[in-house]
Length: 287
Image (cartoon, rainbow, N blue to C red; front, side, top):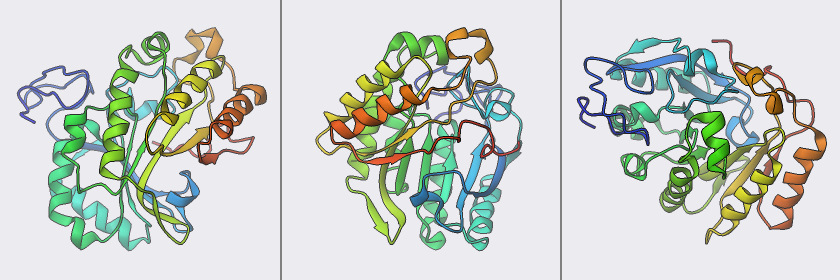
């Protein structure tokens, strides 16, 4: 990417990030909010020792219900050099991390790619690209050969819903080809015991009153030649700006969640589901 015309994400805001911030809220320097051993991911990512999560500040989406709003919307965090980011990767390895988990780093993808080119072999851990799904295929190709596990969200099928709740009516238009590109790069899920070492897991957070959209979205995943693993999440809890939208200003019902899980099983998709009682912020890091 040329910083004077940022086109990394589907917003293609063209910002001169050497002098100002882009739509994501960030400038030329890498900005992170927290790094830690994280135990709130899927079991094959978390393992027994935790995932080495690096939470990047900023985001190209504007989800009104974002649980990480202090860093995505309010941009909490501090700028770090590429050298410091590499150091953080090795610090997490020293702490016993099963992998390095890059959380919402799309707007720094070019810089992340350069860091990984320098240290990935020495690091010797799987690299997880944990994103909101709103990605450009061209940007993902920068990471080809550098990322072992893709962990994208697939939030919406409906442009009306994605426009209303994430200010991105073209969300599925970008997210579906992005998942195809991730599957091209990592065609088969591989495990070392219970820990994933390669592959793609597509996450879907079921929203209140939106389970029909969830079902349509799963049907589209099933159309792929080699469908990925899916993770059906029930952890939605209204926060940040959800109170402005009465229809989602409540927790998910058991009926809504189970309708989606049942359909997932009926069409033959495999993956993960969450137990009842996770609809809170207990596993959200304190930023």
